[in-house]
Length: 89
Image 1 (cartoon, rainbow, N blue to C red):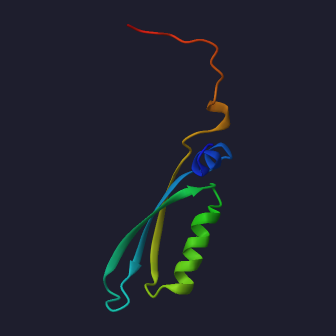
Image 2 (image 1 turned 90 degrees about the horizontal axis):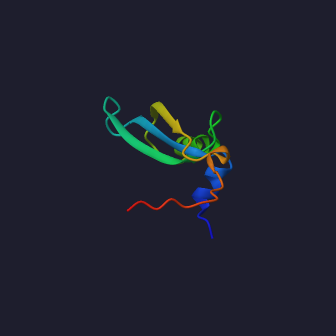
Image 3 (image 1 turned 60 degrees about the vertical axis):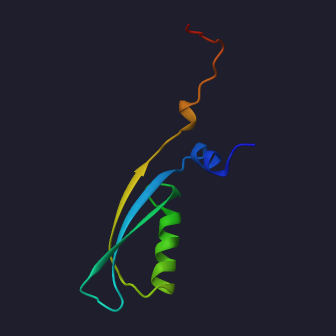
């Protein structure tokens, strides 16, 4: 059985990393960094948007900025059937 992450990659998901800067609730002049990483679909990023909606709704630290990096690790076009084996001594 293939892992859930592998199946998502075949469906076009890519590893997404977001560097989230937010203000500390007790000290709003200070910024804190939080790194979020999940498989998501570019360019709309539904998983990241859902996480940021949760953050705004449930957490006290107001968001300052979000920097996103996305990489497609495996695409269906990269999977090739191999008909032979090469053995090196």
